[in-house]
Length: 81
Image (cartoon, rainbow, N blue to C red):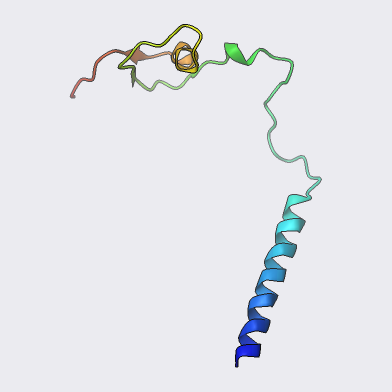
């Protein structure tokens, strides 16, 4: 009984490893590659109309300030609607 369970467990692990290797070695270029390495990514902006509350100020050179600059609809307070 123990040998049978060990064999099943080993077979499942080997099958999972083989499937992982087969799916990770895909030459298909069917995915959408919209990333341009030559473009300035600091000019990327969030175009979705999602109001965002920014409750604190950030240093001009911080990642938080860079994120806030990319948002198009920001506010400094929360409103109940």
